Amino acid sequence: MQSPIVEFPLRTWQASIEPAMQKQAFETLEGGGVLYFPQLGFDLQDEEKRFLSPSWSDGKSKNIYLRGKERNLRGFAGSEDDALALAALIERYASNAGQLLNGLFPAYAGSMDMSNTSLRPVEAAGRTQSWRHDDSRLHTDAFPSKPTHGRRILRVFCNINPVGKPRQWRVGEPFADMARRFLPRLPPYRPWMARAMYALGITKSRRSEYDHIMLHLHDAQKADAFYQKNAPQVAMPFPPGSTWICFSDQVLHAVMGGQYLLEQTLHLPVAALIEPNHSPLGVLQEMLDRVLI
Ligand SMILES: [Fe+2]
Image 1 (cartoon, helix red, strand yellow):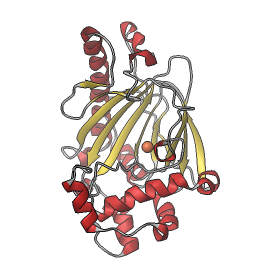
Image 2: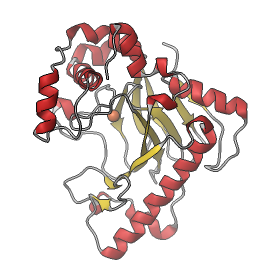
Image 3: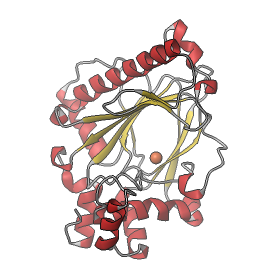
Image 4: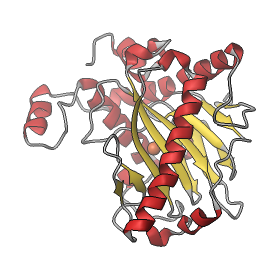
């Protein structure tokens, strides 16, 4: 398998980026690769280093995060002053991530919708979870209560581990190869059920056929132990002081270990893509020869 990880030699979040690199960036991203910035780290101020401890977590959520547009701090247990200081750190990361994306992807300007920004202080290895929630299994992101109708999930990750521990990922085969394998096994979409789930408040909007397929692809990948072990994949240890970007609805990824990560999620409409045919929506519509949203 050709490595889906492409290195970019940036050292600052605010770099002015040449058109040739911008082209390589969008081709990598929309082509289902991972943009890897081995020299792009995020510095904590001395007084912020105290936040590198899982004891700030409220124990209910695995992440501490600033939620979407509200920007209130969730998942945190501490004083009001500590909450303000940590929110400032997370907000600074959000700002850097936004500047980096604007530099890399000028075609997306004005279309990217900033969502949650999180600090992940809990060790990722060895968390006991149901198979469906087990992110150490290869998967593409899809969330039961949040239909996207094709809108992309774009994520910027930065390892800030202070003692040299990498964020251990596995990256799987191209989305189309995975989809071809699992599509014939998925249950059919039932519009009445999608309407009922929305009416009952189980989903935040009506689940489209696209969302139905993405959710079942997520589950099918995770539930298949043979696939997990034998599918084409590469192991990638992202070291502290490095950053990486991908469409997590397209890149098959698994998190095997690591602690202290910053992460920014953004959403992007399919219409903003340069090559919408390469998106999961484009690929699935082509394979099934029908409109899915
Ligand atoms: Fe994921």
